[in-house]
Image (tube, rainbow, N blue to C red; front, side, top):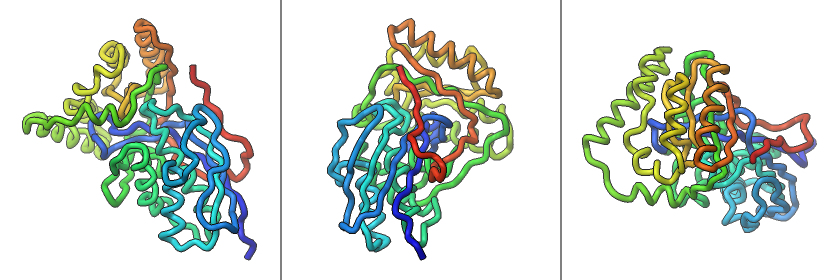
Amino acid sequence: MTRRKQATAFAPASVGNAGVGFDLLGFAIRGAGDTVTATRSETPGVVIEAITGTVTDLPRDPDRNTAGKAVLALLQSERVDFGVSLQIHKGIPLGSGLGGSAASASAALMAVNALIDRPLETAALYRYALIGETVASGSVHGDNVGPQLLGGLVLASAEQLFRIPVPKGLYSAVVHPDHIVETRTARMALSEGFGIETIVAQQTRLALFLSGCYRDDLDLIRAGLADVLVEPRRAHLIPGFSEVKQAALDHGALGASISGAGPSVFGWFESRAQAEQAGAAMVAAFGRHKLNATALVSPLEAPGARVLEDESSPIQVRYP
């Protein structure tokens, strides 16, 4: 059998938390993402050859790079008898709340997995993606890598991924302003404990939201898609957040909140046209706070990571 020498894979951007499911829920976004090319090497271990795209000053030491760390874990655990070199193209800005650090790990794992004689199922890459994600956030949470690997809306436990059904025809609008919120800074805003009333209120919304997804019930989704736990603690990190969120709700959003750690803001909508109109209004709201912004409109059933069999160049997404 002829061994494959090189593979390129793409992993999409994602919205972590999905508002109501802190560190548990996330969904993929069609269009934006990171691309990684993996090349087989006779030298054991991982070498990061190049980093291009929206950010280039990331660590080349594989132990300090999300993609490198994830791939090292895969090679060691699966006892792979070769090393790899990685070329990373960043299509997602870091500190954007779009899963930028996680996407590199997800894409790298997909590319390297394609080089293995007996590739693993995509879901089996999850444990290694989590290891890579700890480099950026310092904690283990799969709400970004989960949807990036599987696509769509995903519930990510500590050990497993569960694809959650969503009503057909729903779209998301995710608006990314020209502003940075570091994941570690956003998590520091949660350092103090939460009252039991707040926790119960959030659990109630999560239950309503998941019930709505499984029952194909938009009223239940609308009742549940609200974050009373994390959003109040992080809203001040995003200039104009309240106005941007209100713009989404004024245009018919089923719910709207912070994307991941921020500063991006998302909303769920019943149609593409509604999402596009809301996205434009959300961009304008950021503009009133002197921030340029870009709207990404995507079906909620967006695809996950994939090997690019016939594509030789990285997927490009323009940001302001």
